Length: 358
Ligand code: NAD
Ligand code: TDX
Image 1 (cartoon, helix red, strand yellow):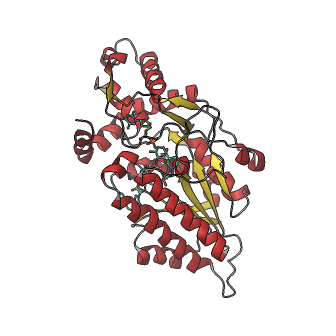
Image 2: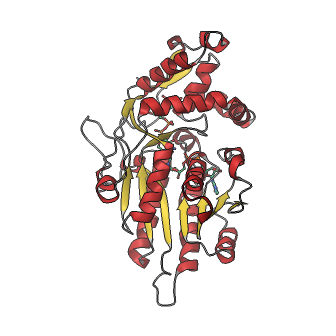
Image 3: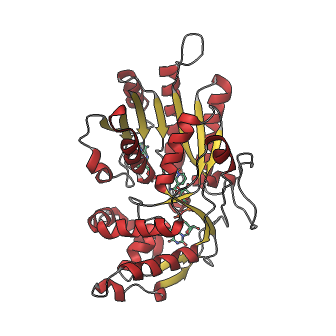
């Protein structure tokens, strides 16, 4: 039985990954989920699997060396899948330091503890151990023209404190691979969407605001482009890279689904209109009139677009969920989980929203 140490498993992508892994492997694997439960971590995301015998939750901060070392000492970890991070660009612009702390120092602690647990006296590593570092396309910077893409060979050019901290963490993983032949992979993925995404990010924020008849804030001219991937496709790609990828390699993950922010907002409004029944009072609230252009994000990257050629050619991964279908599934999930949204938007979220948008 393989044992996984998943960091940040109570967040958006981490919780979707854990669900995916239990659906795929059932009782053949054990997962230890380590999460500090920041504002972005929510154990409600994992309610339906929390009683499994092959699942353990540990509340710990990845910058806490003793806590992470103890997990490695007490368990024979085969795989690390490292999601834990501060992940929101706007928050990084307001408060960069915690991004350096968690994303850079936290990754260093994870690498060091895994190395200490897996290294043999001759400097090689125990058979079959693997570390996967989950990163982002934002490390490559911004593309100006249609037809240009981010490849694994594209030079790093991060602009926000978030992407600079993720780029730094990628460099640390590269340094471990180059210096120690540490058995790792890096994945750089495009924007994810789907269930359990915290409503500070564009898609859930727009769904939540539209259903309440609140303004839909569009930064700048609304024409910035992001390459959107359904989160389950990302989870599948991570597993395929870890099991079938070549060690020490980086793989870009994305689905050639580039859309301007304004297009995304219009698709959400249209889909909400389609899905709300005539007698639902929210139907009258959802309207394009809510679209409100607001001040641009500082240093706002214009366009991201991933070339997923390498992962397709070497591993055979391709996205399965087209955007039209994925956004319908996502909106349906938010309809069916109103309580989840209420819970995560009570308390601190209100302060964040007021400070950010008013
Ligand atoms: P998220 O913000 O939803 O979740 C992050 C999780 O990490 C939370 O559960 C939080 O409690 C936990 N965490 C934060 N600081 C911690 C610490 N110091 N110690 C332990 N746990 C801590 O983020 P997400 O959107 O799920 O992103 C997960 C990873 O994927 C991140 O590394 C991010 O950079 C990367 N990524 C995200 C996207 C995207 O579109 N969301 C795209 C590409 C890559
Ligand atoms: O209110 C908003 N209005 C708006 O116009 C918000 C929250 C966002 N935007 C724009 C900014 C971006 O161009 O929408 C786009 C998407 O914004 P986010 O959802 O904040 O995502 P982004 O900044 O692209 O970063 C995301 O993708 C890469 C994730 O948050 C990162 O963790 C991931 O690495």
